[in-house]
Image (cartoon, rainbow, N blue to C red; front, side, top):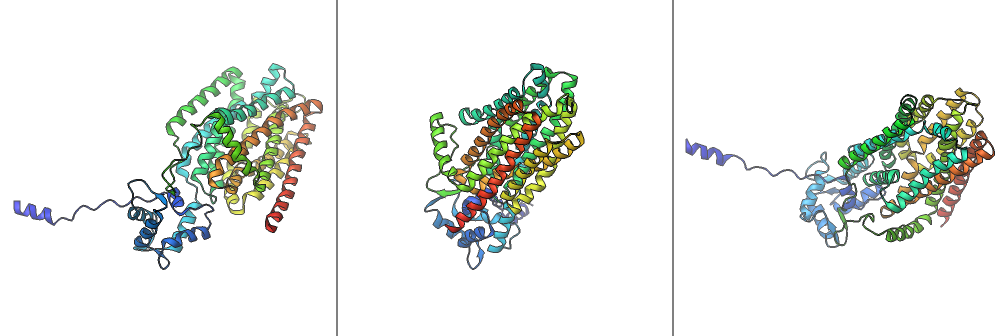
Length: 483
């Protein structure tokens, strides 16, 4: 019996080694040095890895061995054969033992066009909570103005203070309130997305914020009417603190060490350990060449004009117009429902429109969105019934959906990856300046003329800026074509 036991043990097959873990999309992109993620670029990058139109373990290992003389590849304990095994394991549907270049190219292009939903979940949840907090304050602010006997211009200064806090917080003290959240969330999205899916990847996060701003006003209006302004503000503060705790637990860093790059191993940081002076000097130095790009400059200027209009019309004039006792005289609860309805349109429309944006291009969507918002604001200044107001606000909300992700995605696509963080920072900085100028100037203009008059001029300003952008884009396209 003992002999049989040994015989049975010795005849059993040896344990097999675990299969290699597939490379992530970012690792493959770094290995192939992909930027535009077009089928042509992907096929061109895969061709040196192949032999007779197919990628084998031997051909891939030989290419990686030659590449390792000038590049750092993988983790310190990985070798070209192990990296080759992991690369081939990333294509589970490929025929063994070779991988046709056409199949690999099609797979990578399809993968780059699909949003990475799992890493988005914690960012999306955070934006939902913060959007709810911001939304809860919206229907309360007109009654704060009434209680403090503020003029329209003074209320504009209050809204401008929010823009000033964003401007100072994001550029001077790093990690301050809404500025830190919006910047960090945007950079995280650009880290895990590609030009093929950037708008679609941003859409769930922006939709979550819009969902929060849709739920928030409804709750804020009811709370203000039931428990009072002070308790409503206290509840909002507690919700912000809860969001901060959840963020510290669930959010992970999305910037990782590149899987393949020239030179020695290094982790590029975004300047968190640098001094303030060094950060300012670096930012100014990087913003100058970005600003010299005509397409980027035109998009940033139009986005700034949009924020001038948004801060002046939606953030300053609209709540005062709808709660004016001599006009529409809406209560806090009803005003909350109005803002909730506008946000609901953005929630429902963001993902389908983001898909369309990734397919037809960001520039046409930006142009259409600004034109629709500007026209809606002009129409709103002429409304005399609440029904016409609701219809016009619906059109306004659709235009807002157009602009929820397209500007950031468009600017991100126009610059190299190394400049992307600063390009987004420049876009947001100019937008914050627009918010600061728009709220204060439009409020003062309303005191000088009327709320309806200032509203119409605000819409006309954005419509004119859109016409300027169309003309400048056409001229820039002709200039670049003739160079």
